[in-house]
Image (cartoon, rainbow, N blue to C red; front, side, top):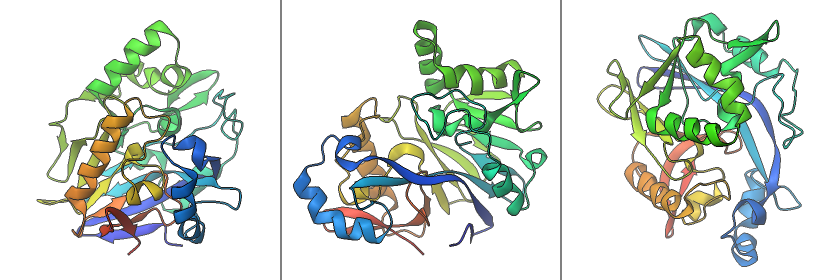
Length: 289
């Protein structure tokens, strides 16, 4: 299984924290019918996206992208020492899997120039911070952390009404350390890194595109969670804030990239997680390269 990809002048590393069963397909995807599940069961199991009890298998990972000028980490996963009682596999973790993954890729926390979050859900911000003498401090000491303004404002407002633990322990400490950049969708890093608004899963969800002059690679975040959503873009997950908008965004995204050479790097598809978008019937597929 490859954890390293090169395209154009980019080198991309996958840093896997967990690859595991998550939720039953019929629960995670409210619009999914038993009939459609039955039609797709064989290939889903064959690609490791579904277990023998029809539970979806997801990967929880970060990507590190090396451009000619910067080392950029996309989505910082689950994290350690975080109280997540609703998710036993994430709750108060103390393992070294993530840090070993970084080290195996030849990357140290001091090498990261930017941390870019597609959105601010719990499993995309966890390693933004680490526990140091009882305080949450930025894990990546030199990094600028990039948060979309629409997304940041949404969670600031939500957190003010009812505390959101991941926002409190994995986002606000970065702001307090003055390492955050709250940006709009015209934000870019040099001539290599751009923001593509992809709302629906959350109001300010974004994808990130990389490449000089063209999109050599795109990081889709939670625009889609399972390969089943490429075949059936109308299927939104129950966690999408606006399921109809998410479905529209997903189809538009795949129309944009299908039959191009852009490498689509998904957040949660099972390994290899990375492929090129191709047409498949009335939907699409993400074909490993």
